[in-house]
Structure formats: structure tokens, C-alpha cells
Length: 86
Image (cartoon, rainbow, N blue to C red; front, top):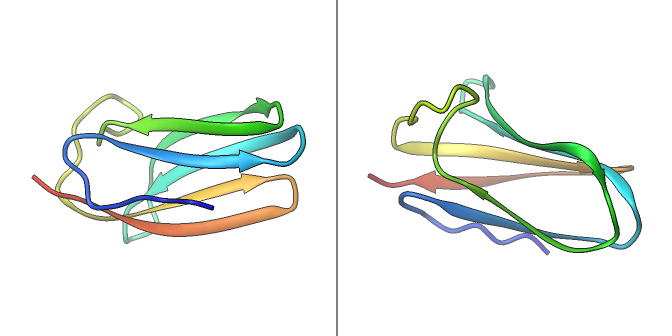
């Protein structure tokens, strides 16, 4: 189960792994440009949470608006929306 609501200035993306897996969590803008990579690593099974502070890969604050995040873990891929309010 994944939960993300409108946020300002940070949000927490929660996920659960039934088994150990290589995990990628990436944030994209609506034009499909990669904004930030939050996770790109092997993770152990269990409940996980990662925070995003509304910044890009260089640490620069991004504009308010709609963003997409993609979680990839093994064969699983899911994309969800989130809204950064300022």
C-alpha cells in the first residue's frame, strides 16, 4: 500500500517489501523529466519509508505543482501522483 497526500514542505513515501529486492524510487515532473532519485539500492524485506523534501537531485527546491513518483521493486512497478503546495 502506498500513501502520499498534498504536502509542504516534505512528504513521506511508505512502502512494504515482502522479500529482499533492489528498489528504485524516482520523482518525475509532468514532462517526464527526472527530478530526484530517492532510493536506488538493495533493500531488505519489511516496512520502509523515505522522505522527499521537495528538492531536485542537486538539492534545489522545485516549484509547486503535481509530481509523479515511481517505485520499482523486483517485478513490481507502480506510479502515483503527489502535489507539492507552497
